[in-house]
Length: 392
Image 1: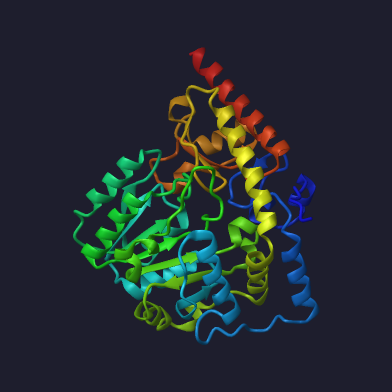
Image 2 (image 1 turned 135 degrees about the vertical axis):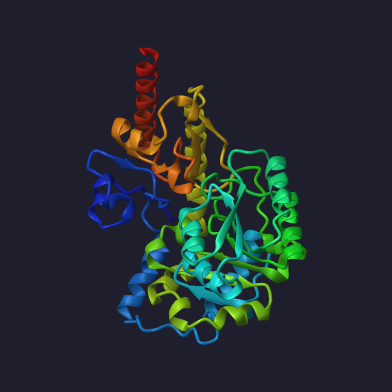
């Protein structure tokens, strides 16, 4: 039977990984969206097998995604996410941010406006700005679904939108857009003749009562939508670099493929092997992960409910919590405060938006024991700040 295995601090710190490799010895990182669990045995076996066979050459991307992966993506999208990708309209990139950069180059011009939500996954805003486009931000923080839909409707007043970029489920809040909001986004896309790029990498991790629908399942938007996903977040293989995308029409796919190959080059041989193994053979492991994450989420929300000055909207998806510390009196750089006073590294809200420094993103994709230490340190830091403030 497949088991979910939590890695020790020593194992996690031994490698050069971004999450644990850069953290000071006394600090527990809960920032980068990676899991603190060993990869599933089937993925490990697939990687060893590829190495043993010396199957490390260039994959064939001359017509799009390799057939095996394209057909597996179609099956998985139908089985897990409620829509079916077209194998003939499937593409592979090394990562989703690369795919977004390519889409921006293929479907917009310098100076065009690109609509996305705020808070925003930092590399997406960087991509938009670095390529000379103008981001237009729609509030998507700790708002009601009605307020989110209203914000998207108001965005329709912008006359020069050429692309809409979604992260659905949403990073960092864990929000999942309901069908009404998706319809509003679809109407906006049709009305502005805009292409929709949807990052759906977190769609595997949903909590009880959550229904996920891809924007591609909204009829009005289907033929103008590009959906990219990856096994990276759910199966802890981000470093292997493999993202898979579906294009709503052959024309969209063809325009994307007109970009030079070196810009849109695909995944590595090991990235392909790991992704195929994850989607073919690791559903039992994934179910164990979901169970652990659900328990962690419940514990996190229970703990935070003890602090009147801390606000969090329960994430409907992902293993990320977007925590509002504006009432805690910490100041404009909550991330730095908690690393110094609490010896925990959380993702600073300021990286998601200049005015969001009093927010932090906490990754609870870890063992129950380590989560307890993180929460204890968080609580001590908050109580220490409260005591200090009350003496003034």
